[in-house]
Image (cartoon, rainbow, N blue to C red; front, side):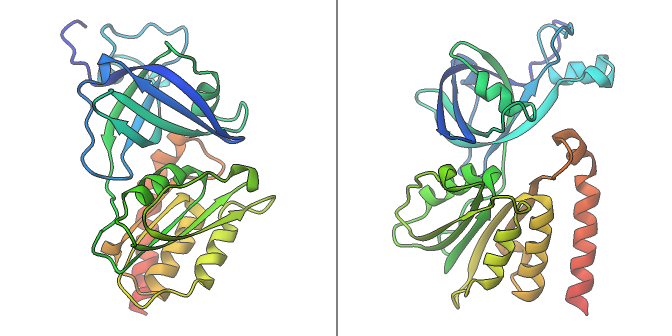
Length: 278
């Protein structure tokens, strides 16, 4: 396996910080990030690699080699997280994790992470940055979209109009958001309601400024689907002015969601096209 290419970045945990009861920040650094580079987007993401404990993997480690030579059931698991910040001079990558105790894979890892821990990363990818020429910006999301929304707000030019709707479990989960924009930030508290219910209601009730909008809407797939239909059909926003996708889906893990996401999106697009044609 010595001739297999290394297809990941190797990072070392530098420090961690508890941002709120349900958000943990992990800063990763080290010379293994020397080849890491972002390209001007505010929704850059990486895929964190989680090998199974007790499994002997190819050396040098490579996700591609694992998939080419090993049974599928022991392929390393991948979890996608937004790049909250990247400092190329210090070689430090900041990632924020939503955590709910022992639930999930990446959240518990982030809560246990300690300086010196090794982590493998794939990427980055991404596709959105707020258009500085837009008349105004709409940013909507649950906790999973909060890192990208925070990065996007920081990137907005001075005085830019933005309406930002963020749903979290409760007031204890609010974070301080920095921006030079004229940003109207509304925190919505979910409590025991379904994820995204309050976001859908808030967007439907929002009085849109009479100007070109550039929108970013991400989070749980169910409410994102509802808002996509609302924005495309009822608000008549062109698809090219929307960055909209389900980061996750309630009731399934990341692998299961990735397996059906393409078909899910095709179905949503077909329903949307039929509604627009009617």
